[in-house]
Length: 248
Image 1 (tube, rainbow, N blue to C red):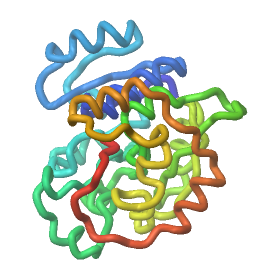
Image 2 (image 1 turned 30 degrees about the vertical axis):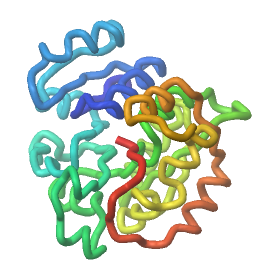
Image 3 (image 1 turned 45 degrees about the vertical axis):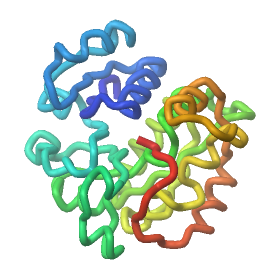
Image 4 (image 1 turned 180 degrees about the vertical axis):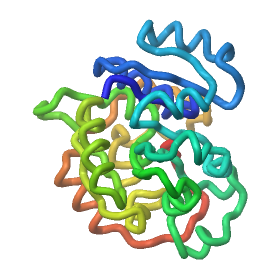
């Protein structure tokens, strides 16, 4: 795997692009506008990143990252992504995405919805449980004492192997959380979601802008594999509400 496609150039998509480049991969990066709108970003990421339309990013290689608002998941091309392993970084935020009845009632998970839409793809829920700033700054080489782990879920043994390797290459231990039906265990509101990776208590009385800058400037805490497993086991299914922090 030398080239990955990324559909969505928000904060998580950008962080993953940088981590992939640092791991020696080529990246085809796209957004909802046009490649020209990504020129400044691409120039900061280096020669191994190229901007393209989503169709080309989807066709770039066997692994594609979908990092867009969940409300837009049906815009992902079924034809272009057929046969691909697709990493779904999306979280459900009703205040942003609008209410989705099946998710509000807990009848399914957001990644199961994506899998239903991309029936010929292999969906993997990953990189949604950590903030973009901590994702970018906490990557460590394999074997490092302060290496963090990230949870992921999929119904496909093939995709489990592919994404487990990718997570490792970009600087994290991979903890398998089960099938897509179990991916709620690391969705917003669960114990492993965002908070464990955050630095110690955020100072009080910060504005939103100050808080964001503090998150960006302050190194996160390492969360090892055994801690991630414990937090996954402690999770209780919660219906979507207003999350306090966001991973993407």
